[in-house]
Length: 274
Image (cartoon, rainbow, N blue to C red):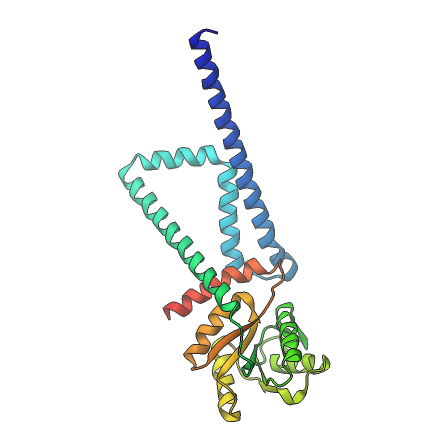
């Protein structure tokens, strides 16, 4: 075979391989973006849950899918911007911001995992953080917390437990009362349970629970029962109240997790800053 023809064959193979790799990358990005969008839309459609977490997630996965669909056009726009001084500055700033955000997400997620794995001591005072009640019935997130608390309290029948949660709009009873009814129906002794039914936020959960702890002479070493993604922020607030936190984490439903996880990242950042 002539040398030129051999070089041409190799060149064509390289072009073919590049095209195939680009197609695979586009399919991968569109697939990831599409699955992410579907995952984030499920809580919106099924549970009518629209928060900063769902909006952020939909935007991110939408951009991933959009880049996969229009990769050629996007790359041309980016290349043209990069050739200009102002465009290069803007893109460099955006890349820097993206790196900072990625680093923050990794750090925050690591802290979430560590906090959720912190085991309570035997004499810890249990605090269950309230969550949405529909009429007189626990929401799925509250039910997840109650199931985790039920298991822990049955394993530690000597433990005292503060049920922390007030009554909000659309709730016929306080979250504390809802938790009390559920736990006593599951065989938990009423003598173990103390109701705190005034709080409307995690900060108030901890502050009002601490008041009960001081009044009753309970241990300031606490076992916080909440969803796994929420344990880290709850522990920060607990420490600010002079409590020593550990975790009894509740597992979040897979279809709800991304919306609440992303929202929690914002919540932790707020806690860090303010």
